[in-house]
Image (tube, rainbow, N blue to C red; front, side, top):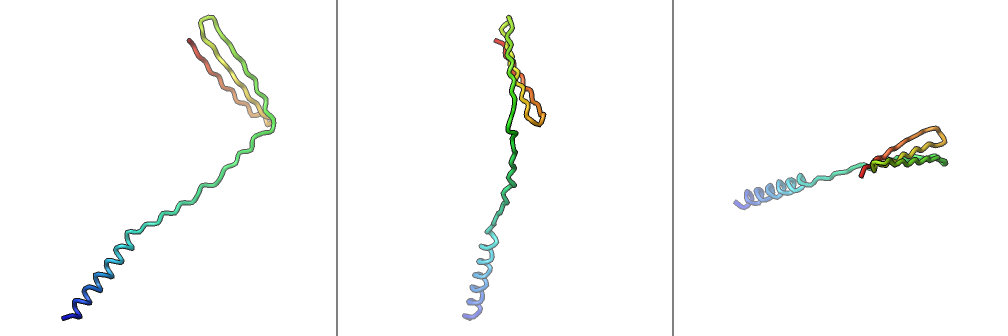
Length: 79
């Protein structure tokens, strides 16, 4: 009579231990590769400002590096 009870308790303990292990989740994430952008040593910048009689103003900035890459940005505002 005692042996079946002990066997049942042993099985319950084993199944309970495996259920606890099944709930453990490990998430591993690899860090993304680092991107390094080298900027050119020299850069020319030209700034133009214009105002009109109706209260509007614009500012244009042009940048060019030694490689010949050029970028122009214009901002306008009216009061």
